Image (cartoon, rainbow, N blue to C red):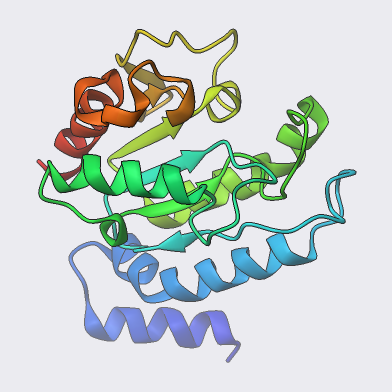
Length: 203
């Protein structure tokens, strides 16, 4: 008996009500680790000789955050320290912490200049895979590069509407430093966008 039939028989023995979700939950962590290794090994574009940003955070979170990333983004969350502080502050107003969410860069390598379409296309399988693994209820896009990874045109700095891409629901907001009043994030559209994404995901 091959391995697939062995696994199928084990699933049948447990007789879960939802077999697909049952198997997904079992293999989720392994699939996440495989994805991280694939990102580390990727050589599909000219950014592949730079630092990598692998997905991190809570893989069971109903909210996935996709960020622009850049050479200035040095921490594990693919954010600058200032961005991380501001996002943490925004989340705290929603009774959440930065560790409650899952994160991936729109492009998984660091860059000095905005990555071209080739790099965004090269990273599309990584973005698609993390969505398949996490199965988020909502996705928060932070930055124009993150936005353009799914939608055409440019992100409106004054908008935080809910966007749809297939069955997925997105809330998009501009990169933190480009929002007027960034230093006082509680008074910006950014906090409203975070709150809207949290509400969709956790309620």
